Image (cartoon, rainbow over all chains, first blue to last red; front, side, top):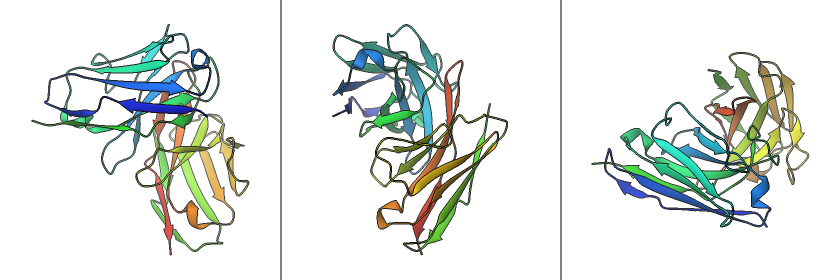
Length: 122
Length: 109
């Protein structure tokens, strides 16, 4: 069965960095785009970034552009989110989520991980 | 930037009743709209995509309709497990970009 498992969350000081990982299994990883979506405590959902199935294209929300970088390793079935220059407003549960349609980065998200909590605080 | 608004913010209903949730876009998004269900402590679950297509494994009591700027999620016969938050999401085809509505909470009356 399709599984996505996030890791790497924790507490970071403002201005510092953190790297999240998403381990995928149960499907042909190299065919699907992967997204990161976050949810601040008690708040709604915010899309963060998507990486194309082959890793050749990345797209970001304006709120993280220039600070966050999404990448993938298709040999290891892993996706990463490098978060630099962290701010208090980046505090959230971060989910990785698979795009519904193979090879289409603009597609909704059909499988989600359980999330990993990032807290940015001094 | 396309903004999504959802109404009502909270919907209080009893099991067996019909739920009608609304999502409105600030400009036309054709049928590029999805609906998700989220329960406390869980990840969202895709219910409907492209405005009216049910995702795999979603019961037939969930249906979506609409196009352009006005969309509706209908749950025809509420079951106990349907009490949750519901979010709509629009997608911009190119470049890829997604925004979510603020959500509707469906709770037990």
